[in-house]
Image (cartoon, rainbow, N blue to C red; front, side):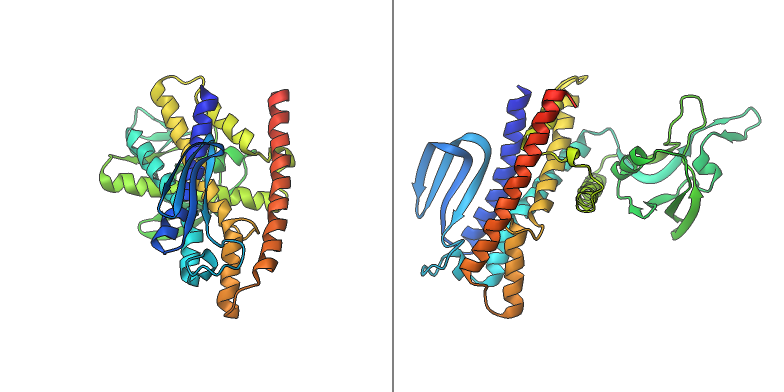
Amino acid sequence: MGIIIAILIFGLIVTVHEFGHFICAKLSGIKVLEFSVGMGPKLLQKQKGETKYSLRALPVGGYCAMEGEDSTNSDPRSFRNAKLWKRMIVLVAGAAMNFVLGIVMLMILVCMMDQVPTTTIKGFSGQRNDDGTVTYYAESYETGLRHGDKLISIDGTRIYSTLDLNYIFDSITSNEGHKVVVKRDGKRKTLNDIFFEDKAEGGGVIDFGVVYKDKTPLTVIKGSGDIFMSMSHIVGLSLKQMLTGQLHKEDVSGPVGVVTAISEQTKNNESIVDAIYKLIYMTALITINVGIFNLLPIPGLDGGRLLFCLIELVRRKPVKPEHEGYVHLAGMVLLFGVMIFATYNDIARLITGG
């Protein structure tokens, strides 16, 4: 059951992406030959006007086929004959729809919370004494943080939500001084050599609490936007680690790993609400990841095609379709190779249990 749910979620994310291309192409007057939900053999197909609408057997994606995407075409309504700004909008629209889906998922997620967390500090680990004084166990308080400080960054890493805090604290392996930027009394303040350690028995790295706000339309929107920024930020950091070699090759994951990760979220939950919460979280993270990845200037991806549009904007004339096609073909071969490698990693982890 978990695998089926995972495949459907993955299919939803890709279909939403392709729908972005489809709707903007239609609105721009570009001829759409086919819009398909799913891949593989056709189950249903309906011709409406110039466009075929298909439902296919494998719910793992979809596609939007436009006239003249990869070749010169005499049809005035082909993709390549459309105005440059229209083509750019169509290319960006897929990722934009992934971001819209992510925001919607995060708004649902925040609505499921009892209250909306912020990054403003409220309370440190400690104990109130009989004489009214407080003995603090929190190293962060002892080294400079205070109640009401709004956390801006730690060691140069921007903090948008508590998700960033969890990401940062998960990476802290030793108790060393950190550079923390906070907003205190309306002004930015840089604090050096801040230590994070709860010295109480059983304490960990996180030695402070944060302010929680009641749910209102404004706090839900603000909280959703903050988590969206955090997820985008974390995806960006992961891509940076991959490009700089900080991410081990064994950590690279493909579709099998994604489906497995989503499937795992349906197991060992305290309640159905807990399972739904985790699935929404994973859906939001993956769709934001897909949106960002597709905008990278890699041949074969939307970002690669967008790069050629920008070159055309500067040169005032397009690159020859056959030349651009060769570049995209090379990019697709490279991406296909990476996908095979990632899938190999996924299967190896399933076999070894790693």
